Length: 87
Length: 360
Picture 1 (cartoon, rainbow over the protein chains, first blue to last red):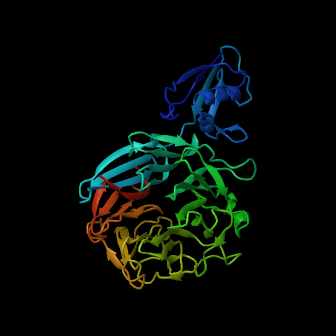
Picture 2: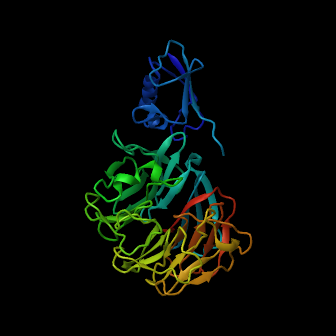
């Protein structure tokens, strides 16, 4: 079970979407699939067709920058970051 | 039945709704809505009151927000707002239209998408693949900063399958079969740059049709103001009498086929009102002469800009005009532009203003 930490920019229209979600997944891509199953459309908010992470979305697995195919271990911490942006 | 006048104002940081009664003197401002996403165009379906707002977040992509209860609750969908794997990438959506039971939106890269279920799901209609200019208009090296791709969609009054679109920097195209085939509609327009193909390459900023005469169109172009008397197919320039040939907006009087409004801007880098003095200009003779309207508008140190969807006009007997600035002010007139007042002062930079007259 990986622990995903989501950015505050993910919109409020996802009812009951918490900032931290536990998912069973072996890669970052699979973890996003699990999120999309519970909150349809959420994959579109994080990924472009390809698929690839959106340009200004960064993912870290256990503090290391990751890609969609990065493997998750039991108890991995996954941080999804909306890149720092100007006003 | 009493009427409510509702403005949908799209800004760099969300959508706002401004509301007043028929007197249009006291305005209530609500917002920001849409989680503060950058809004490129917000419209109100006059039949249902549903608000639609096209948006693109640098972080989370593009989508269309909708509210069926005038802003009390919102949903957003990007389902189907996607190009097939290949050449084109969708970075944002901008020009919206609602007509004949369909919502349509223009995208960058240039394409038109439509929804038949009130904005819940979308499908790609066309990327105008056989049209002149198509080979180059999605080339980033040939695009201006802030490229919008397909900037506007203008539905036909009666025919649900007929509508016009604007491809930024290339011009107007019309379909009569729901997007299956297209024809350029740019004959008579002017360009201040070399054209590879005389049919396209014109920088149309805003296209409007007279509600009083469906054959009468006006457009504010990068190069001048133009009139069409044949449904937008051929054009005659009517810039003489205006202070500049540049601007982004145009609005058609709801009851008089000869009356149109523009807001000329300096054509240079700043693209603000000339001499820092705000004014709307009106023709009442189809562009033969123009009159400057500035009563109530700031006349000193007002270096304001108005973007292509920033001017709207309502349908009341004495029509109200509304424009929003790139510095966050909204100005309104309840007497067809003769006098003005500032009804919002500190909104984020405004990209669009649209108005609806709703029952009750």
